Length: 420
Image (cartoon, rainbow, N blue to C red; front, side, top):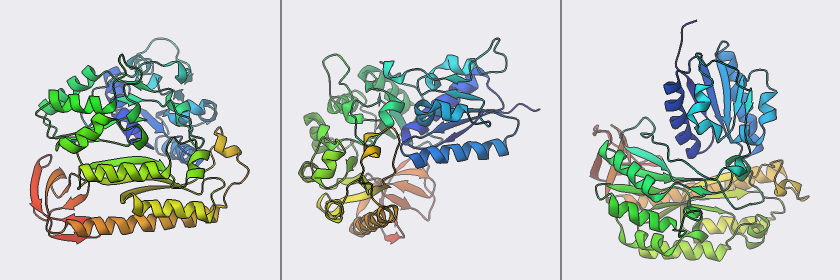
């Protein structure tokens, strides 16, 4: 059999994609061959089902390869994947980021390795800053600054897959960003599981805003800094200051809102109320008028009535949300919400999710129409497509330099994209 480099399949979040890139480097350095690595997601029961389905498909397509399963689903349910005949190895979320794990699975390793290598994620106290160079694009690089979560939202299994919150020290983050800028990246995105908890486990307990200000000060050649999903109730003064005063911090925030009704938010064990979300969005817009928001919203959480749902629907306009990630509630065994007796009918959940998506699509149309005639600085992801500061997609009929920041006027709207 001809040796082939390891193949990776990634399900789920941006952090998983980031970690797959880091694993690719480690697996190749270890000399791992003829292997397929599946980085799974556990955010919903449906995500776990899709992970199993993907493993079965990959086995059919790669009958002679070693199938290695990792990620959150493998961490939370190692026995489920170990019992699958298609799977050769199951490794946990901590183990997957350790080079010695990959060395132990390479062909020239002498000795036996256990089929299941999944330790207690709650005992992990550090997150290493893995050095990777983006996702096969010259435009944007992702830097993991935090992992895990200390909160226990009743619908969420992720803390049991990722462990408690832990931060990459600021100095390590700054050094990595300097390295990426030296390599020519024009935008860096800070990522994490619960980004706004960054620093809580560090000496002096700095906040995310402190990290953002430090990066912008110490890496003056970085053209654009973007932060991924945040919890608005945890936003600190320095982050608000950066929003107001730092044009290199991109005016696009993705908010973990989840719902628009106070009672449902309480049953979710969220730490904010609807008025907190509205107040934050109003304040951020006042400080930075061009600010756009994305948000996660769950439709059909147990006990959600029509009136509760209407509050979520109204929140889309009240917070002026543009990019919605709508999640139909999916019962997840092992979470408190799965035990709530008043589960919402599946057809009702589907219909409510569709309504939220319609509201989101209307907000996107409004945002796109407002950009006509405006001039934007657009980061080119490929010769014919780039993104504005607000992360809006822009197409070019005339090819541009990949990775460059191009200043252009918006001429038209085509579908859900701008045309320059």
